[in-house]
Length: 494
Image 1 (cartoon, rainbow, N blue to C red):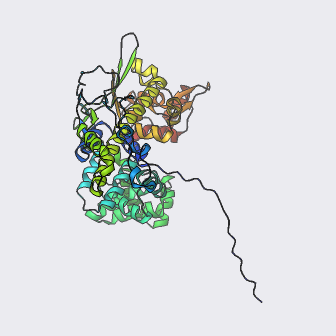
Image 2 (spheres, rainbow, N blue to C red; image 1 turned 45 degrees about the vertical axis):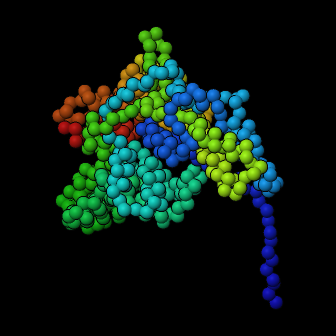
Image 3 (cartoon, rainbow, N blue to C red; image 1 turned 30 degrees about the vertical axis):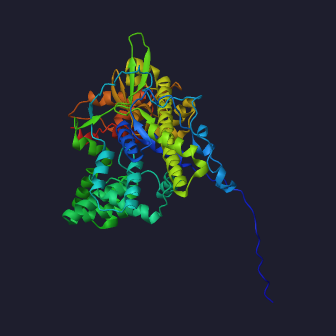
């Protein structure tokens, strides 16, 4: 006789992180550089009539407080649906809504500072995205994927983690298949190789682009090498590749030569292809160093307007509140609409202020950790620093620091730098001293700059020279740093 199955009910606790709409707004504003913030503020002012630009002495001393703290539940009865105006307007506790620039005197207009730099491939990709016929959902996914690309133009995150981020931070649900389709759209952008998840895919995308334009037997051989003999290719086992694919030596060597000419960093190549002096870089921060070593930090708000709550809307709310005893259904709906707009305006002002405070805290932490550089401007003085170091000093979450430092620039006495420039790994020399990778790169560049161009230094020779200077490292480590500086291999430097 078969034994009946039993159903067992169990309880388990699970911690799930959810973000409020206000928190999501703050996160989105943190990610935006100054130019995008200007557009976002203007858009918000146009969409919400309760939010106004400019300064008004008559209304600047009034506050609209969060109505959610003063509104009682409508379930308690219609007579208590809305409290008095004092719950919305409190003149005894006045915050500053004028959003003056940090550390700048009133009335002083920030100078617009155009600086030329290589074109950001993020902006170029968004321009290409605008030319595609996509649904709004597909466009949102593609936009987020573009923002997730690293400086090389590669996607280092898994689609699963990106799907989780979209759900948590953006409130957007996306299946792996939808993300895969959006990624394929990006991978079709110029230059070829963008959006690849690893080097192998990056090279294959570039070959596939050439095959689509003009297929040749050589391109087929290149595809076969990267598809079926990738391990042999990375280990330079050329003989094994020829034997496995049954290629003659000439075809095999020519295919390998062509593969080596492909760009493993299509993102940086895009900046190089477009060239310099093509895009104005507006710094988000201005750091000034005086002769006595004093450093001052200001937030470049540029054309971000001062914001205030609309006096007309607060007056309308006051009138509806005074007549709440005789309110009709339409009047109640009007009051709800007014309150929602005022809540949204107040929330946006608070989010802007929180963004300013977070940006200033993060940049000040970077200055504190890299103080010698900001005083001297010498890259070799940069200390090893990672996101965790800044997060701990600024007392912020690592993910917050990551968003603040992405696509942001700082103007210093020594030039304009992306905030990512100040983050670098560490290297321990023979004496146990922790050295910044910037110093290692500069030393390698110095060796290469002074090499005999008729007989350039190989990576093995460079590794030997670094060892003599007290920095023992493997050949592959030298190759990694050389590639990061966009310096080609020895045979291409002749």
